[in-house]
Length: 124
Picture 1 (cartoon, rainbow, N blue to C red):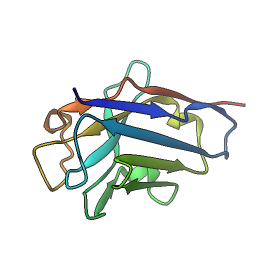
Picture 2 (cartoon, one colour; picture 1 turned 180 degrees about the vertical axis):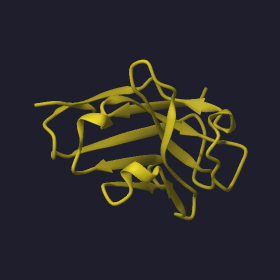
Picture 3 (cartoon, rainbow, N blue to C red; picture 1 turned 60 degrees about the horizontal axis):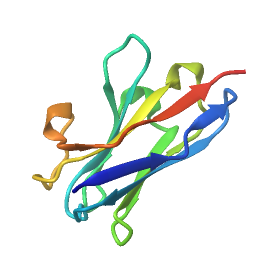
């Protein structure tokens, strides 16, 4: 059974940093794209960043230059380093994996495995 487990969320002041981790088990995603989505209260889920098995990345425009997605294929883990956080970044962040593809998609329906989410709150 595939499991994605996120960690690293929490409360941080504006301008601060957090690093999210997502550890996958039950399947080897080393050649597959993995992604971070987020959903703020009352809003639709949106793609924050995604990365292929070979390291190609895509970012939401509003996080470019502040967030960095990376992965450790040996650990089957994907990370999201978030710097210069803003109150608008407040959301539940979800890890996702597309076990059927080798290139990333921006469509949530392409990701067939999801984590339970971790809350990120940016507030003073």
